[in-house]
Image (cartoon, rainbow, N blue to C red; front, side, top):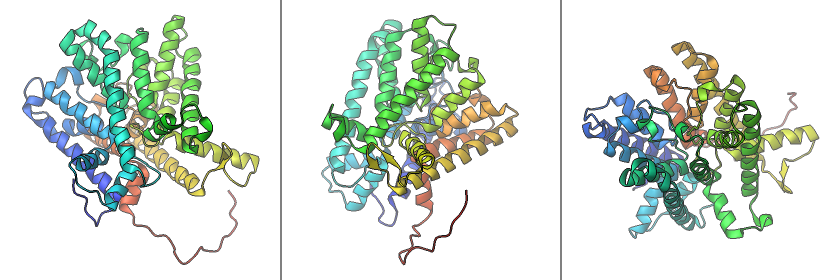
Length: 440
């Protein structure tokens, strides 16, 4: 994997994702990628490859019934590479081959995994690759008894590995279409064991590699954790518990207590970029749909397999608002000051996500003649790389699908990455301009 010296790390990340999506598209277009041995239209293959690479989960063809074993292998490979990062895997292969990595290559890897510094980047990359492999294999072993019992040994093992990778990478692709097309995990809504394993995989993948490195290094010594790890863990916990309480009392009150608790927890966990669903989402109230849309926009944590604005961004915005309300001079958390540039970046990310989310939803609603809230759920799912849908994805026109593909790409590589890749630095080295009071 050769890195051009004239390109910035942000441009390299984008080009790498583009190349992977295009490669996956061409492979899926091959006749033996489909079960009927026919060449799939370019637009459908591009949408599928984009969704898999960007670990989203939105599909226009049922994964289980349409794609052949080769096609499914291509999809899960795209999910694996997209989840851990194209740059991470590419440069790790270079390092394993004995080639010495340059500073620019290490810098590119740092941006790819949202690492705080170049120092120790290869150790962190090794931790990511080994940790991902261990968690995915452990997940497959835990899922095996359920799938082997239902589908036989050979198919059951394959299903276990596929769903373990898909859950850990927060992709949401499933192979349950053999029972009912596009049904996700609804047939297992009452299976507590499978639901818990899938939820654990989603949470582990969505917490972020940097946070897990902190947890493993410092274990129960919470005071030694970095500020980011503390914020990520607390925010993730609250974003699971609070929506789950709403779902328990507001959406699934007609279910038995155990199944009600399980469904509430699962929908709360999966909404933040995972893409699986154990209940028919079209039966949810408008309030439930709106809450899930917000959760999809927030997404997972920095440096994780998940997309979205990120939990740290949401926490910084909340803390900034609290700082204004309490008239404090600085944004603070856990007896530490949050840097001003982090607050500015969080505000910029929120503006970009909301602008694209709302504009895209309105365009799709106008083009397709569908309810606005339904279309906003779809665009929130795409830009948050969640993959959840109210069942309209397959009905959309090429224009609407193109919008969703752009949103999936935007959500995976990151809004700031796209901006930094397109716009050169314009930092004023001569000094700062005079300030003038502005009322807001």
